[in-house]
Image 1: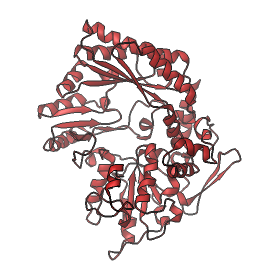
Image 2: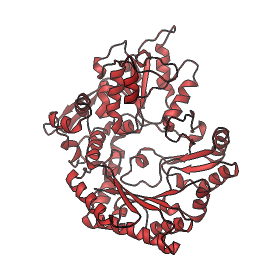
Image 3: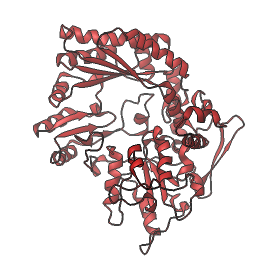
Image 4: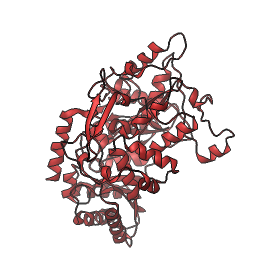
Length: 518
């Protein structure tokens, strides 16, 4: 509910006189058990059955939500597969960053996808719907009518053939359909509001209003999907931001500033000061280690910040250079010193394991760097009283589409477990250090759903029928999941998501991949 893209679309749709947009969420188990009619799912605004809407639009940010799509459709009594639905069923649309990267694993479930940012680009799609919606009677448009819109992808308009080795042989567009689908990006973020539209206590970040200050990232880290897909890097100007801040502070006392690279906004400190001067509190989605300075930390501490995050991603300088994480050891340790001076009690550290070219010495470097950060903090404080806890968040590297590492493979689960065991064991006796991590087996599933082609939809259906039991489903399916997860891809093969990016983008990413690997 807190997702700003979701709220932006809600505002856009409801600002049109001829569109009524309502929200639907998958009920939790407790709610479902309390419902007398378990075959229905209802909207929040009017309690209307989901199946009675003309259009159902999903906003998908995480691949782990894919099974929830099927849960929602089942509750609404809507057939899972697009080819099994009729004119009487709603038009099913999907968007969100998970679909921008690779919609293929769920392509069989949807009528169409909107690939990209909607603010300046959704109107052509709505116009086609309006043309078909005559005399106040809904007529489900023929999908071919949407094919002329640059950013619309209609899976049924493409025929896919495969080689004997499982790779895609051909991705053929039907007559009237484009060979590639264009990713749409908003040219000017200042043209429309980008802040919380709905305030509710029943969601994450319920105590604050959210405000986007930038989109994309100028850093181009080789592992980061958001930094590579949301291009170009765009800033909202100070005047626009301040106007929205004043409106938001009428309803809340705290503002969360969002963006993939919030700390790269050149007027960030001035924006924070403006919120403080207007008796507001500030929260940041992220702050790069090289941007952690006395002035910024002081301002954020006044707003109640008790925990700061440093994301080295890799322990050694060699590996940070390989992944283009432009942080030096001195910058990381200096950030710890600044936090110590301001008596920040909790520090989070983000690391990736299983990165391309990673060696055993890089795992040792994570352990050593963590200890160096703690010692830098203590040396600055002259004692050990100021620090409460350093929390390491260790995550397996997921090779994502549209990044230079899209050709890489996921590291074997058993090897990732060994690395986690080594890090946890080595830091177990260190005071004020705690290690947390995502389970490698879930990283395996995320990689499967990130890199899969249309055949993966069959695995999703199997998992749904097995009550989300992935282990059982992966064994029972006739599709080899290791083919998508553990196999390195080559430049000449057709990637499942390649129809979105085209040849030029692919060549640039390949050049970056080779710079990192060799």
